[in-house]
Length: 402
Length: 133
Image 1 (tube, chains in turn orange, blue):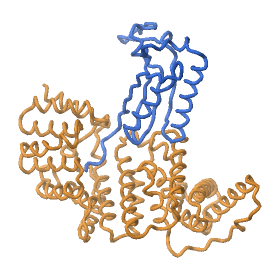
Image 2 (cartoon, rainbow over the protein chains, first blue to last red):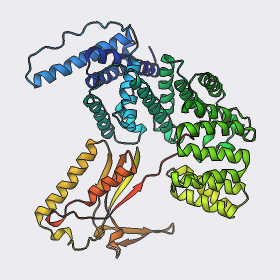
Image 3 (tube, chains in turn yellow, purple):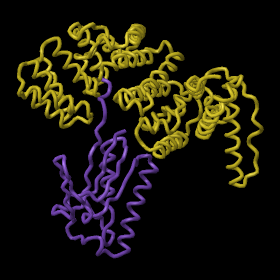
Image 4 (cartoon, rainbow over the protein chains, first blue to last red):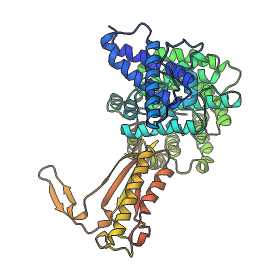
């Protein structure tokens, strides 16, 4: 008898493949997605007791097709239509190519808001139930069900068929896919240790799905870069919070807690990603993370290289948060005054943002001006939306007030 | 998505009598408007929960030094600082939360005129900060 956990893993691996087959055959992605969810549920109820069928994938496809046919039939009956569209479910043909990626690309359709795409991706590609997704995002199941169902309607309304986009649209959609996976990772990364007992581990799920994309597009630099970035960031998670969930900044983390095997894999992937012809944001972020993770002690960090990479990233992204980190790196290389100078133009681009105050607090402290530093820490504490971070900033201000 | 608490306060709006003195049809229209708004928030997948609270007469304030709590009965002088009800929403942006608050504030009062009740919008604290860019 196969263990429930093993069955769960298998079902989630098969979910997008099965959906790919069913959606391709019947065209209606929305209905196919519902049918596959029902088939997954049926499998998770039957397989632990009855054992795995000889062909688990075929079983799921057949069950989903049967549900789909039933759904269409009852819909037809309801509309008093006699027209028979579907014949009896037939034994599924094994498709030539795995359509998991097609499913993922569809879930990250540009007509969807990022949050809707995240929810739909977790269900259709990740094989999570609506209840699990709702629990992960701390909203009621009905709210999440509504979000997913609206997302599917929106894709349908956009006239999207079940096919891989081509040309410019392919590149655009792949960017959206990577952004969605990044958001899923980040969502998991912001949960505290205590919370993870209640939340599905979204970071692990993001890594699993990014691995799936990477396996199909192994030579794509940004895909490799994103996977590397996730692994290198996740490696530091055990050191990121202290005993009572308090935030421990990078410079103060106990580096012996970092996950060495994740770092090794992340560093190797970064090297591969950086050798790609075109360099994008995820590759650069991965390279920065690799330099942090490669430093045995905080004081060994190669800030000169990090500064260079932030310079490139700043030019590429135009994101003011990157400019902020660029200023921090400049301060580490050229001293706090240089960093503070680079922060000046950011008041306009990030008005009132707490991170600007938090960084100024840090740099004024390095400059030997504790009173100004404390004032900035206090201002940052008043505006952050993260509770552990607020506690951290309040402690910084209080420490300097003594 | 970000969670916001949308709070309806008991502030008196100038020129608007208490609801007990409204035309019943106006009360009907007011309640129907709010219930329709909630239905829309549910349909959008934005509403987490929402409740109306009992009035100021039933409000109590509690202080304690760790022994017996001291309970003060309402109503209190600053009624406008009391909550009348709340909605917890999960939305794409602060702008959307403000838009929802605007819709609550514009609930019709006597004669169908928007009530302009003051609505407070408070972001719910998140957990750890995200990945550093």
